Image (cartoon, rainbow, N blue to C red; front, side, top):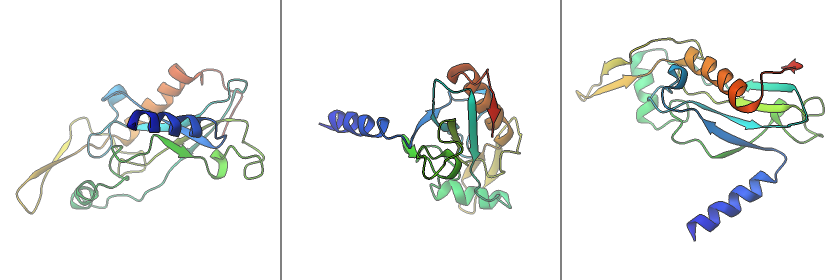
Length: 169
């Protein structure tokens, strides 16, 4: 019954012109990782007849200390982990597939990069930062924002045909 419900959900959202499908990267592909170590990914709706692309990069506010990053992880925040992301998202603004909402770009290949690194895609640390919490536990912070951005673009090129681009917004 659960599989049938999931199949109906996916079929319904697949026919929705505004739906964006989640594509998670392989763990460590291109050095990617959300703050909690879960894999980074992106939402995409492809138009096979278009070589135009629009990519929207979510904001989320920076962690201003190691402890604030730990708090994001312990709070199961979508800003720190991909484990809470939905399989299907809706486009909005420049990623909307609805012509009335997005007259300029609704026919483009539409991509949204969710936020989960705590640094607006700028951090680059090879090894996780070990942070001792007040309870004596150790939390690992994966600071890989720059890697996430690079790995996602490489995935779009390799897996979704973004190697030929006419316009990129």
